[in-house]
Image 1 (cartoon, rainbow, N blue to C red):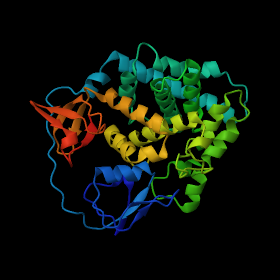
Image 2: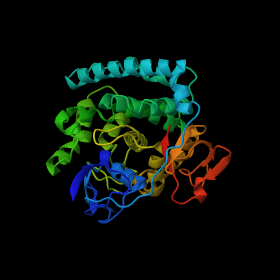
Image 3: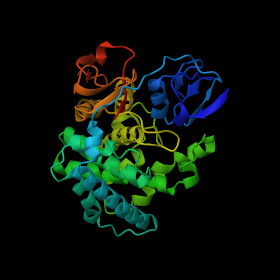
Image 4: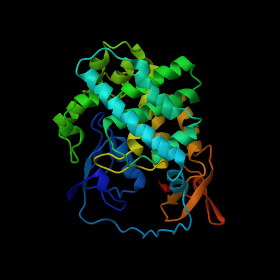
Length: 361
């Protein structure tokens, strides 16, 4: 047997031991499981860094790669002036945010919140819809995976989620701020742990789990909403009390922290990490469908899933069969399994067990 980091797992590999989640000791997968894409996504969902694998992989059917004869939706988007402008604004926003946060961590309590938020609202403005924003973010997924970048992503996603929930403009503003500040504690964790590509020791994982408290301590004296401070402290709490650091249950968790938690996990799953590449959004959506209703606020997760799937309409996707097509219809009873137009054929994934979207291209 050998230890393989999640980033290098491939369908067909066989688990050599049971896999348990660190924070709640839940059995995730059994020894002998032949891994598929969804299993690998489940490991990422629970932040499993690596697993023990049998030396010989299971037999898997070869996958053929269908040729794409014209530009995909993603390729067309990346050539657009709007994407180029968004990318430039995003990079400038990340640079400014990094500078401001470092000042806060050095003890500067004089925060110009309006100045800090202006670049975020610039990214959200200019007539861009939720679909536009998610398209932009998806096509920046291989961009630098720093904590600063992640916080900006989560601020944008939390803003959109708050609008989907029909929160007031004041609540949307607080939600956006909560997303931007939520992970500041990660910057107080040694970089050698944050960027470690291999297995974390128990002690290292416990250190990682201190970042919500560290983040709260770093911003508790700032002149910002208490909801923003709570989001830094509570964004890893879960409705079923399986989260950390306080093991809170649903009613005890600040509603802004609940919204940030969904945006945080979605962005973490669909972005590159040091131990794996970005996961397909539809695999992430499938994980939320399977396990999200116990761990996250039901109203929020329903609003998030029902709306986010529609942002990917008209995107070009590759199925696990190798076929390439376009998302043309969302199945409301199986959100992660839309209908795909492949050449002159239509594939309803909700009626095709074993076939799923592997990649948005």
